[in-house]
Amino acid sequence: MSNVDIDFESESKLMKKYGLVGYHSGGGCFHFSYEPSNMPTCVGPWLINDVDKMLEPSFEYPTDENQNCVFSFSIDDLEQDEYYRVQEYINESFKYNPSATFYIEATDHEIIFYATLKNGVPVMKKLSKKISKLIGG
Image (cartoon, rainbow, N blue to C red; front, side, top):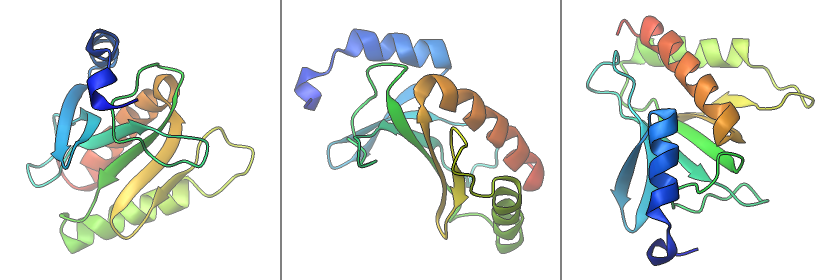
């Protein structure tokens, strides 16, 4: 689906239902976005896109709450000690489990996980609260 084919009414309903906003990151890439209210201003928003069977993002808005999505949160701009606290928390709390419904990973640049929009938004919001505490937000 190209951006000209997007049914903005269904996307608007999803954004309202889950407390998300639309975000254009440039280069024709559109995302659902969530910016936790108690994070420092240096921290960017969560970006959410639907993914295909190979887990490649479409860079367009998800159109259904049951679509598989990627949830990503940049940790590049955190202070070094904050960055390490967040990475340690994610790596210790969410060790890989092949039977889990989702897997959360802290890479060098971001926190990333895959889930349906319906299942992932509550996880994202819970993670946001914990991350805020870890970085003193």
